[in-house]
Image (cartoon, rainbow, N blue to C red; front, side, top):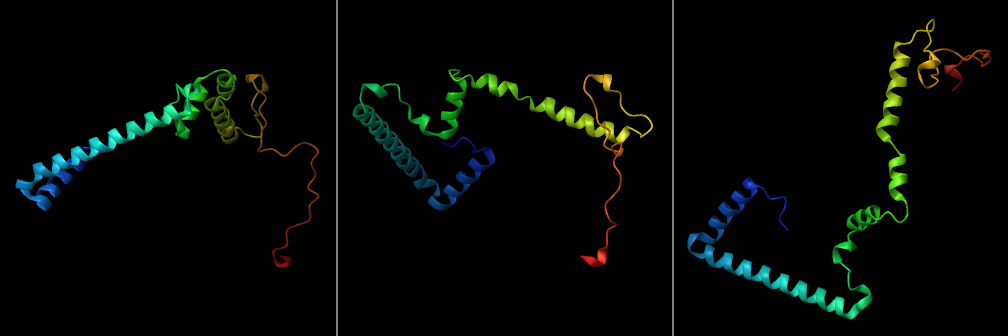
Length: 146
């Protein structure tokens, strides 16, 4: 419930509680708050049990945490009936990004007189050179015409 409260936040809450309620009323306030939280938890568990009984034996293993979309997806991805692990493992994003990075770096370091060799495992295209046979048949750019 309070997973992200650290020591500084807790100290701030304690100091504020001391200032608002005072040291003489603070123990009673803490008891009232804990009693209220306990009653809310009991009510929640009772409601969950009632819902499970009303759903019937088909939903015996139903967990309310499965209604959270993240938990549902995590559970479905762990279940390998659909072969989703093979699909997920087929996408190697780090490998793809490394290839793109290598292509960019080789373009920066390659000179037009020394193209990268295609025997390095994958054929590289030198983007700094114009393709052979491509003539510049476009009309010149006229800034005043636009």
